[in-house]
Length: 374
Length: 113
Image (cartoon, rainbow over the protein chains, first blue to last red):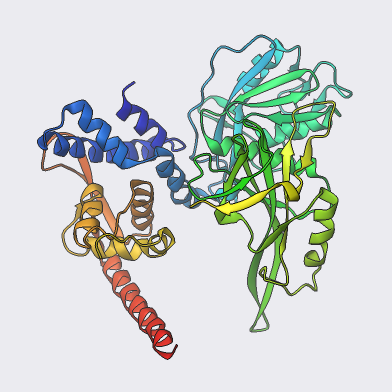
């Protein structure tokens, strides 16, 4: 595969059929014309191609932008799951690992791009589970998952409770990674996540390796669901996760961060709206949580600046975070933005994959320094 | 203003207006649009492909512009050429006026300071 082909694949990742072909042809036209121009300027064909692709920038930027453009209008067509599929990859699995590919989709039940989530090929999951001594059992309309060495097995896969968790498309069946995680938690085993590509789901001694094909949205969806299930009650719903490995819009923290470890910043964000009551506009709103996740470099962690609340202060533990957040969750709280008197409480967590330990620990705010790098 | 580039949030906030303005007149394809943005502003507007194409598709979906594939003047692969629709012309006019009013009022605040 040449560099242009690689670019086109990455830039159109997540789109289906006609839309994918059209965007691909459009970008290809752009690239070919630009290569011609550089060649007329005296560059060789390969130099011209390199220069063109450098000029185009990261293909992920294009595919991300297309997410919001090409998904919303497809909402509401009952029974059809639309668009946004990352190319799936499956390579040879190391022994003892169940290794499945993932795809990122927006189902028709979703309310917008933030509801899009990642999916596994269900047939592949079944086959891979056998390698680790597990299985999908029971009737096709009500399947259960069985795993070795867990307190409860088999447990029913929760397919009907939430919309968009299971669907068929082009001869394949897809299961949302969130539904799989819920079922794994239901086994009563310690469930842990680590890694980014692939994301490894540890269930006691079993490792389910989810290949993301380099699509950050898959990792985001997995960690969002995992953390929502791990953080426990007493918190507002989790809205989004976002990570930016290149640190393009980054807020950089320095501190005791270990290269390769996954960290999550829990950020409360205001969502406000107006309603009409008897012809009068009334303000309303609530706080939702945003999880900003990234893999650290040694001593450095970069998070997406655009969703970090400002001003903020880091809290020392999950319970301190909940306590600090509580006054703002009250229906009588009139606050709709953070200010000098009301700093957003935030919590920085280091995630752990060790089944015999806690799933996360709070990073001590005293050891962390923040600075905007871009 | 050569040598100076706007904040990326400013570009993002006005991208539709910028694109509609460039497409006013002759139809153009993506690469031409990005070049014109640079050439006509002395390099001030540098539209990145990552935001340009999603924005063009959004405007097409909103029916402010219409795109169709045509053979490029240099031969080879076809390019997708965009033109303003009547609705797009009206939208451009509305947004242009809104921006002028906004900008004039902001100017008032600076004068009073």
